[in-house]
Length: 450
Image 1 (cartoon, rainbow, N blue to C red):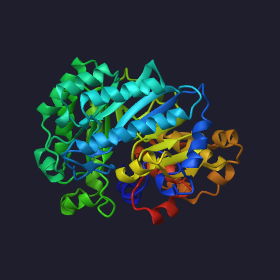
Image 2 (cartoon, rainbow, N blue to C red; image 1 turned 60 degrees about the vertical axis):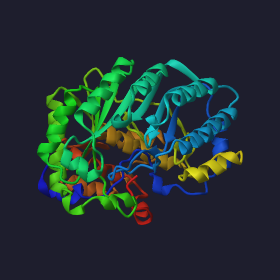
Image 3 (cartoon, rainbow, N blue to C red; image 1 turned 120 degrees about the vertical axis):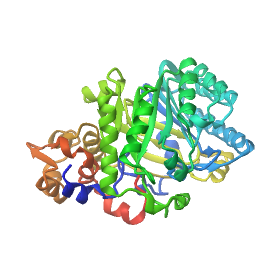
Image 4 (cartoon, helix red, strand yellow; image 1 turned 90 degrees about the vertical axis):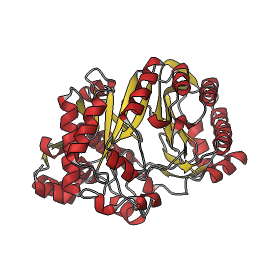
């Protein structure tokens, strides 16, 4: 990438565009009554996705940007699970018949902080109140440091089809600086136990831009991870936002790499994974050639949601748990973030919806443009606008940000089609931002990239 392009666009704090509009646009004008109506309107013949948030960890990783609570005791976790089960029953009770489920995702926090029997009880409850088929994908996020043999066996018995393991970095200097000590042996053991239990599709999460990280340490981590041969990698840049996530103040800002170094790290990881036979998917995912993500990318069916790049094509996402975000054809909803406040809502017999957003026709059009750009690095603006009943000309001809990107050689525009140049794909979020009509408002009201 040209240094001038990196300097101009690479340092911009932009959303990850896992949704559009992004979370800062959510407002409390969308409440539990609104969401109840949206749930009742879900087409009964269409698959839905389910997301379950487990907001607990045993220790805080200082880089973390998730909604989580640190607890050494099990009682708060058990109390929370009781509320989570009540929410599942409440949502399912509003449907005339069990909704068919295409995907289930457990996120956190650390979902595997719960006991094996509690995980199996949750899966049994989901199967009791929803229609899960043999083809339903079930994914869980895992901290390899906390995974027991018994939990791995429970995941297999519960029908988990994919596990995402946090690795971040194997460099001991970096690990100490982010308060996450995790050996290669611990990670390899987790991989072994999962595969032996029948959970064969594994994802590894890597992070660049961490304190004391170098190109060399990033490559060493990637090579160590490659030896375990996961099916996928997700490679994210660390977002340092101590004003929003106060525990990030424990990180030495002087040890953080600058923009050029971050870019070099990202490129080095990418080159290492591609050289090992992985295909790059979108901006920051990598997959083995046989993986479903590769087929989705090759056929133009790659999607993007709150978990990143995905093959999940369900239009409805039902979120369970504190801070969980859901999506329906009408818009987005988010539960109360604080577990205590979330629990009080559910105990009162109403959904825990705290805020949300009702989509407009223009939002849906812009969302499709942004998703195609993020997934394919190209978008037929005229075709997408026409499909939504809009004129494409204002999106292209009156778009100053798009014109600047074209002038800088980041992309080409011809016949209403945008094509991002191969060597500038790293700044795809800046291209997507050219179609975000709310970006400036969101940046003023919220300091965290959604």
